[in-house]
Amino acid sequence: MRFFNFFKTKKPKQGIELTSSPEHIYFSECVKKIIEPFLSQYNFQVYREEIQKHFTTIIYRNEKLYIKVSATTHPLDYPYTFGFILGEGDSEDFFKWDWNSIPFWRLKQEIIPKAKTKVHSFPCPGKYELSLKKAKNELLKYGVTFLNGDLKLFIEARKKYNKEREPYKIILTKKD
Image 1 (cartoon, rainbow, N blue to C red):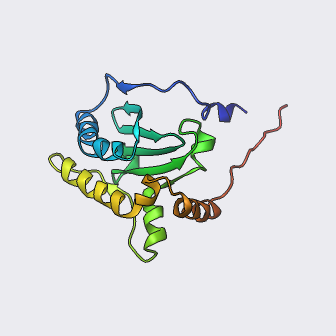
Image 2: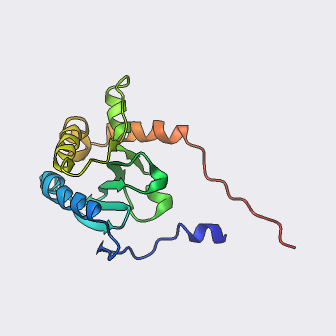
Image 3: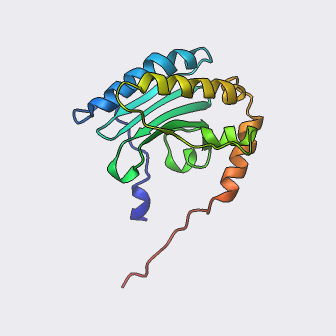
């Protein structure tokens, strides 16, 4: 069972780490400037913020609902992206949030099945605000039901998303 120790919930680190990259620091500042005031109109408040060298995660909560803004510039994650994850329930426990959330583009796909949907490309320096404004407008256009607490469409999209996924497998090795 040591494998699952990786997924155990630890007290999350808050804020900016000493090794945070300037691009992620600036990206998070733009999120706070553009996305945060927008989400506060729907009673979503900052719950947790983590800025690292190659990753940014900012979670906004409104009671049982959450929106996670996530970005990566890790070399193994090329092409670099950012996006929203919409969820219900616990936003910290991996086994809960992994199955109780969906990427925003899946909700958009539920509304417009033939639309090309994907996460956003991580913007070049100088384009952060423009990219985040575009993402905010999409969230308003396609995610307004979720923002207002109407989960009917979200639950349907999550159901379809999870149906496509393979359940976790626990592999036990024989000890000598």
